[in-house]
Image 1 (cartoon, helix red, strand yellow):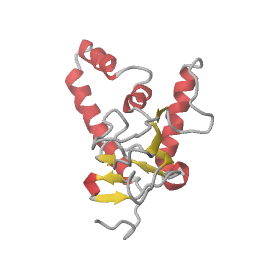
Image 2 (cartoon, rainbow, N blue to C red):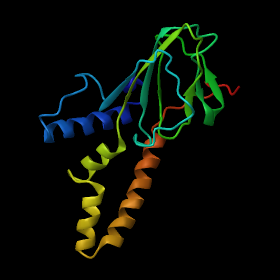
Image 3 (spheres, one colour):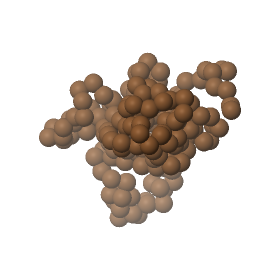
Image 4 (tube, rainbow, N blue to C red):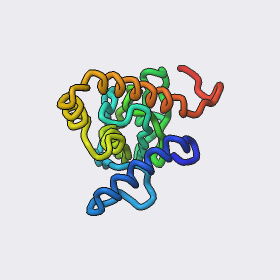
Length: 183
């Protein structure tokens, strides 16, 4: 689904993971056919999230959310995308991909005798920065630049490059005119 609906970002995720696993062959892949670096099982039994963003994830990256359990999706379990002003009925077995680092999201509670679980897949932005930095943290790159006397120049260049990456990343989002109706 990720590759189909956003091949540009999917390819970026796969490339980042390939580099990580090349550099660190002892790392264990989440799964052989996933583009995400990490996953979380939320096993409730009443998995509910309050409005939040996942700030550690790549800004324009997609997070995959899968819901399962036994609950009435007409009465609860809805996914709320607060910034967009929409509530989405999210029955067991549903999957959605959202840019969870900048869209405030949550889900609606379910009844006490029901169960709702979720499985999410995501990738931290720091992994992409590490790959972009040639196997170094931002802190290490900036320390080297400071030691060489060009820290301010490197900071300005990196800030401009980060803005360009974010612009390009956000422009890669597919657009469906009239597909979403505000409630």
